[in-house]
Length: 393
Ligand SMILES: [Zn+2]
Image 1: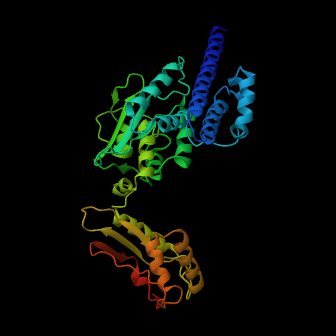
Image 2: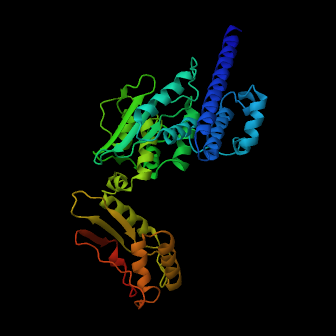
Image 3: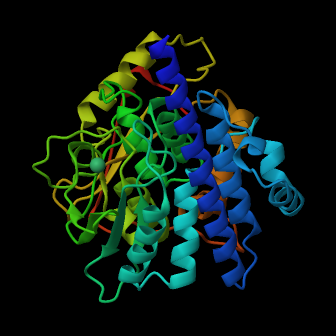
């Protein structure tokens, strides 16, 4: 009986904390929204959607009606922001509520004012309540990333996951990978997702160039937090920490994602460790697969006969880029897929070059998109060439 009573009291306390924190964050967001000249409807929509969703998946669940005592405020919100009310029980949000709040604060204060941004976040966090178990809707750290090679370079911010407990954190990390984060960050997180075990068949971890600052601070007292083991594994950040937080939970993920989404140059510098360097293994795996496929007397359905590796030889251990030959059989499917690749998949330089001769090997008189590769680009082709005695290369 006593245990049951205790549990109920705890539940009541927790539910109060979720409601209180939701309410404080929503009020802050509406206030920030008033101070912003631009239309912030989409961002407010996103924050409400994310909070309502976290309420819905909480155990026990809290509906929007549970969150607001104030029926008038609820009605006004429902009228001004109807979308989150329609979506929260059927659609995933894109990211955690606090990440959206951060966006609003950075936008309002200006990315260059790091102290003010951190200060505003600290103030907001200071108003939120912590339960004995749950830490509903609270981010504990902020991270700042920037390119140190450029003076006064843009600062990109991120906050740690503001969910409480394991399933919500995992769901929002996956949702962020799917809809909000840069693909490099998402690939890195997915390499370990969901249970801290590195996948054997996929490695999307990255190594940040040395010229990138990626520095996290506690929101309680603004002291620096060194990268944890997870962030070391994901992004190649140097650390001696052994603490391994859930992958995707730290502020580093969001901050780096914002940097990579905006700084193409940095993205290009990143060395993917997916195994691009394991050329032999990649070629071997392809060969094995091809070896299992059947060849008809005429048609070679769905078989690629060559793999090509390209890389910049001026840089030691430069990234290898792979491609396979067209795996279609016959002329028309090959032409259609080549055109489709030019249209939707290939780099515009390659597409222009191919289109110069497409579809009938005659060079167009009115257009020359062919290119000349620099000498430092290695081009190397192999893969069961000996199986192929076709005449239509
Ligand atoms: Zn970390």
